[in-house]
Image (cartoon, rainbow, N blue to C red; front, side):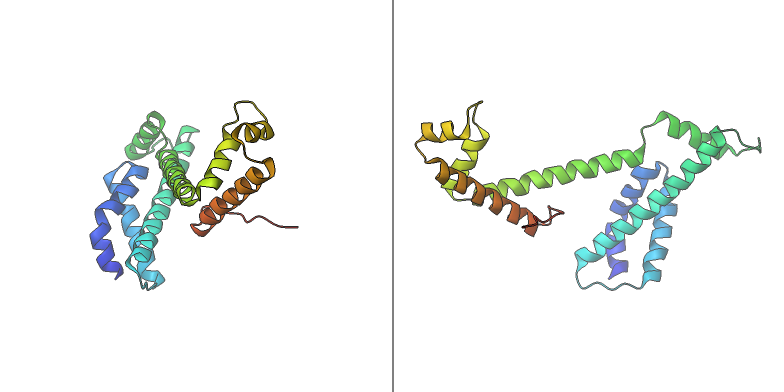
Length: 191
């Protein structure tokens, strides 16, 4: 199954490596290194998506490793090499990396933004699944305009204790939804 997935997602995987390494040759090296690692691992997958995720991580890791090796070589070159006969390729890497934004940072930033967007979508889904009284109580708590929660509840004609318990139950339901979807890395410890 891995070979089929590899062929189907080759261009996407090459794009991932290329976005980090900036050259076609380096991206091809990362793909080759990742494919060898994957084949040596001997992993078997029952679902196609598991194989895609595994390949994506393998290519990403290989590309990051190659990128870090190149950065170390470039920083040694810039610090003043003992051998003044450094290759043109290394000097080109130095110029390229100094003038462009760090592709690894760009990739991490894109992943962070994607994660935040997914989190917002899940919170919205959880919010929409709440009963109207719980949504109303949370809305009252969030949109107080500088007033106390008790004052807002009194204006809305809802007893404070009722609004507070609805709000807490609603927040707990949202937290449970996010926990089920693996968006929360921690679990609340009850004492």
